[in-house]
Image 1 (cartoon, rainbow, N blue to C red):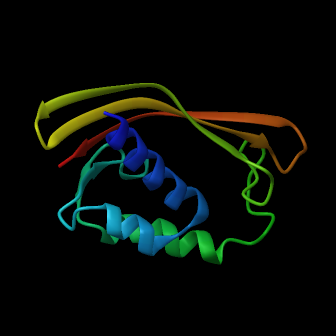
Image 2 (image 1 turned 45 degrees about the vertical axis):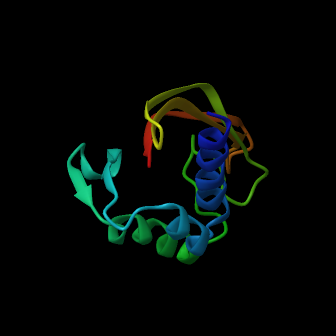
Length: 121
């Protein structure tokens, strides 16, 4: 279970730092995701995920809207209430709430949360 939580943290760190090589190395090429940006439709493969890494590099420094965490500010990214369920010796499901806090471009404190699930093999 500790290894699954470490891998999950490594994926989130890759997302937070925009490190595509690390994210790709931790992800299956046949990754399946359901994201808010897809309006809860299933997307297959890493191409959709790559779009976020590429667009983050092109975002201007003051790229956050009011009420959003400013990507240039200090950000705290926390995994809350993680739960790991081993389905087999080499298969696990981890669920957690991801809490990202920081300061918005308007100077106010902002907190964003997402309920996330990852399957590891």
